[in-house]
Length: 200
Image (cartoon, rainbow, N blue to C red; front, side, top):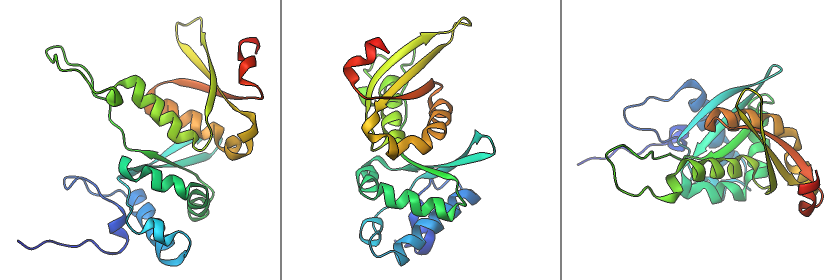
């Protein structure tokens, strides 16, 4: 049985055979392929990698973000080149902020399904992993929850102030994308000493 080898930019995008690539996904695949071909420092890492999909998100004030979804098995390799890769992609996408996260799926417990859901696929776990991906390489050091008068809940997430320069310019995009992907309304702040969170 003959097999078709995918070459060129399309080898950097792997979607279900039933789904065709969007124009944005073609752009992302082309951009990653161009970096693989032309950037000597990125080429060795990018060669075996590809992405699953990409989405554009309106983050307000006339700004937009491009969210790229990676297969989980490639995420650590994307993290190795995270800073350089996102900087290069943001140049190619005319200043749009670029976020790379793992492709994750929530498995919900059905009424008649008695099988235990793997912890990594619960809603709580998936939301935590998405947050960690969006914030990479910065870690969460504290949280606070506030209940609003309309019954909704807002989460305040504290990040290490020593790492502020790594993520500060993307906080607005991260907040909007996180809510769009998880439904969680979160705001972010920076903390010098995590032990002082209770007094903030």
